[in-house]
Image 1: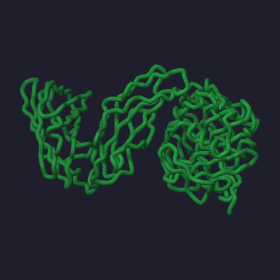
Image 2: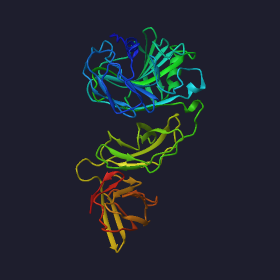
Image 3: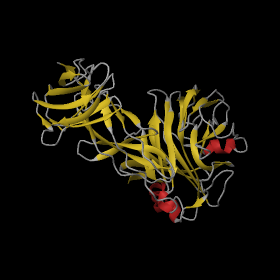
Image 4: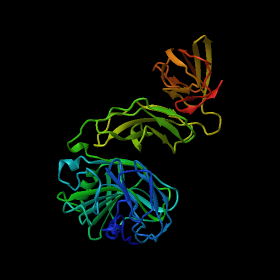
Length: 462
């Protein structure tokens, strides 16, 4: 069997020893091309490192407020050897480079360790040879510098090319709602790698779930200390375009802050195409600060699964099927790892992809006087499947303000308006129509909206 020298930062850590440098104080939106350059983000809570340990070609990363993106890389390493680098963001201590206030090292037998959670959202290019992986380090002592000699837990979210973890596969495990191939090898310390059978671009999990599996297999010990949690990429060939969009670590389950963020409100779907839809929502509040939003989508079986972690209050869901109805909800996550309740769900239907404006038609008829107006809106389902639950959305170009409505719940935020069914009129069979109306005020010109969406899919007018 082809033996890969290393699956992670392991060999890189040996090379980096004593040379990892901080390229500045806490800041973001900078470019790092220095071989072992690093900087901090989020007031020092996390460290971002270029860590081009295994190659002499130029590698540059652009650091943002929530992660980084690889902007320059031309790696061309043999796939039966070690990767070229491990650009990553981490929490804790790595070769005496420590983030602020992490509380690491931390013994794995404590209740605080049991409550540590982490989440990441990544972007992948469609070429090259690489893996996208967490690298979580443990040492028999509370070490803050030098090479850890306990266990290295790698969690592969995705990979491209004929690469494999160090050692050999020793089994499978079901953790965090997914099935993983488990690999183990020893290179002076145990490297336990979990390779997801179905790739994902985002993940949020409890560190102890994977560590417990490693302990149960005899590859780790509860007396050891967690020293760092890292997330990034190992490239063999190429790598430009890989990005960590957001990364967070929380300790909400082990004491300290236990207050959950407020539940997100105002979730809206818009701009649907044949394979994507835009989601937006109102920001949550929290006493220690919201670090991200988990985005969930309903599966074919009716349950929901997480598809992404967004750093702000919007996300574009991609990879969808044309003329298909989808449901989404979001929840907030704070710096301590606490999560809010689930937002109300929103339903979106992707367009047919044929340029006909989707599977709906909207007729908007206004009646205007002085500074007031009413409008009657008729919505027709021109698709071939029944719509269960509808939301019609549009944007005014003027200062129209809606004051009352009938046959729909109409809400307005600035110039953006959405009308939701009232339950009894929420079913719209193929070819069927429904109507609602409202009254409002305006000044200047009462210009009719130029476009409408039904459950996020664009509609034709008339």
